[in-house]
Every structure is written in C-alpha cells, then in structure tokens.
Image (cartoon, helix red, strand yellow):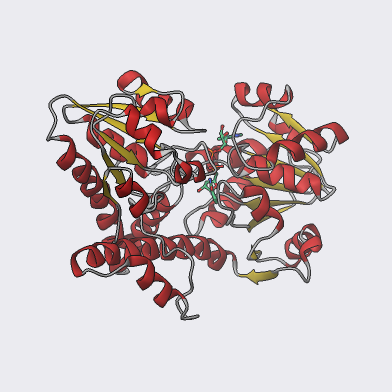
Length: 432
Ligand code: NAD
C-alpha cells in the first residue's frame, strides 16, 4: 500500500518506519525543513529504542522517504495518516487544532482517486466531521473518507508497541474505509484485537484511556503519601492491589507525578470537552489538580533539605519525562527543576538522553554535567527524577566522594534504601 504520513514526530516517525517495515511504500511529510533535511541525511530526529536500525534498513530499501512537499506525500497515497501535534491551548488547555486543520486544508487539493484520511493525532470528539468538512470545502470532487485511528504507543517503546499493540482501534463510518484499513492491519490479524467502532467512539477511546491511566498514576501517588504517614509500604500495597485482576499490576508505580506530552494534555482536553458538553468529570478534574500540586510538593521535599545549607547545590539526575526517551515536554522532572529554580539553589543536572531538549527549555539556568558523578560534584542534595536504569547502579561511594553533604531524595525509588543508608546518606524515597 502507499501511505503518506503527515507529521514526522514521536508518533509519525516510528509509525512511518513501522509501516515501511511491513512492506508498504511510505512517504513522511513534515513542514519543518530542518527535520526533513536531517532525516534525508539519515539522521534520526528523536531517540527511540530500535528505531535507528529499522529506519536505515527501510530507507535503503526505498520503501521509506521524507519530504516537505504535501503534494508528494499525498497525491499517490491510498491512506494519508495525520500525525501532527495537538498541543494544549495555553489558556483554555483544550486541544489546539490549528495544525490538524492546516494539514487537512493543505492536503485536500492533492487528493487523487479514493483516499482514506486516517487521524492518528489525539483529537477531540467530532474532529473527524470537521476534517471531512474542511476537505470537502477545499476540494468538492475529492473521493475520500476520514477515519479515526488513535495511537496508543508509549514513547521509549514506540517500535515495540507498533508491532505488539494491545489493540488496534479503527473508527470508520464507511465500509469502504474500514476494508482498506483492515487490509493495512492484516499483518496483525490473529495477533491482536482489532476493534471496529464508530468514529466518535474511537476519538473518545483515546482520551478515556489516557485519562484513566493518568488517574491510576495519581491514585497510587496518593496511596504512597498515605503509606508514608501510615507506616505501610507502597510496593506491598501495590502488589496486593495489582494481583486483583480487576485492578491489574501496571501503572501502580509511585513517582513525582504523571507527565509527558500526552497525559497532562489529554486529561485537560478531556475535561474541557466534558465542560463543553455539560458533563461532570470530577475524577479527572481532581486528578489534574492533584497532579499539578504534586510537582510542587516534590520540589518542597527537596527544598526542605536544601534550605539547611546556604547557597545550596542540588544535583539532579534525570530530566526526561520518563526513561527511554529524550522528550522533556511536560516532564515532571523539568517542572520540579523549574520550581527549584525559583529558590536560592543552584542546579547541576544530568540525563543520558534529554540534555539537549532540556537546554532548549531552560537554557543556561542549569549547569549541565557529563555524567552522574560530575553532576554530584559539590552537591548538598542529590535528587533522582527520571527512572533511567543506570541510576539504580550508581556507585554510591563514588557519589558520596563527590558530594559536599550526603542527602539523596529519590523520587523514583531507584536505589535500595539500605544500600543508600549504609553508604552514609540521608535517604528519602516515596511511599515507604
Ligand atoms: P510531535 O510534535 O513530535 O510531531 C508533530 C509533527 O508534525 C512535527 O514534526 C511538526 O513539524 C509536524 N507538523 C505540524 N503541522 C504540520 C503540517 N501542516 N504539515 C506537516 N507537518 C506538520 O508530536 P507527537 O508527539 O508525534 O504527537 C502527534 C499526535 O499524536 C498528538 O496529537 C499526540 O497527542 C498524539 N500521540 C502522541 C503520542 C506520544 O507518545 N508522543 C502517543 C499517542 C498519541
């Protein structure tokens, strides 16, 4: 099949590579010329485990191409996948639809023959109708259907998730479009569930899923606060809860709050939509507020220790919103860092992948270290903010040797508390 992918970011790029690997001819379009130039030169623009090898292989085979030209990406395509951003509106926090609508408007003129426009971006209910209207207005003779095809990949596992999805949701209102997408996803038949639903149900499934997961994280974080006061152990509690198949084991890890480019944005967009429809989504509203407050509470835990020292130096390990990615968008680590910067402390930071993106966000307000031990130099407090596996293997005596005072606040529970305490640290973690 010939596939055009519009938007070559964290979703569009791994999806393009994945569809090419399945044998399709894929053209990825992006209106960011620097991004496309880099990709055309064989340089990946995001970090994702396993992406590079598959990218190189498919570019070499000629099945995967990159362009800034919408015409090139769309005119011969059987399916055009929209994967542009839907960031939060700075004031209302609703999904900002300008990129979707601009892409729809631009592609309309190049559609040739029957084409399915599949929306992989996370979009408010009714966007399919709106995209259909825009294309129809621009090109009244176009032969097309608009389908909702929500994406559930996890950053850091994008390639794995592409080939091993828990489910594929297809929201097609026409049989013709449904048949084409079933053909596209034929390699997954018998391996995963393919759910065919109404377009509006499909658009809702994505938001309802992300909001549920965000609430689950917020729930376990509140339970961690409870355990700290009640003398319980959050891991024992999470295990005891998670072995109940109605609850499930996943997403019961306590931490500094949920973040990333999806959960905060999608919970807010869902809450906005509900208010518009006059529906009460109190659980989601409460999780949003509680999660926002949690980042400040976590920064306060650090400041509580740092304030014992004049001109305190804080070493920060981890800036990405989670391990396995360089993405700092809405990263709890970055939000905690920004909160700390409001106070009289200096920060020396290290992240194995996200330093460049962090620097784009906060620039020279931070000192950037070469590794964990370099970050710890002269520090009074060391804080772990992202769950990179390598932080679990820190040489604690070497860290201690680098620091001025020996405090660790581990907001990802990466270290064994006995090891940290035996190495002479005042050690705080979450939920224990
Ligand atoms: P991103 O910002 O990484 O990528 C979007 C890309 O679209 C950018 O490269 C941008 O230059 C390009 N673009 C914008 N307007 C364009 C246009 N008119 N023509 C061509 N290119 C255009 O965003 P992302 O993280 O890949 O997210 C894309 C969508 O997928 C969002 O709606 C997001 O909510 C959803 N989603 C993201 C994830 C994730 O893990 N990142 C997971 C599931 C769903």
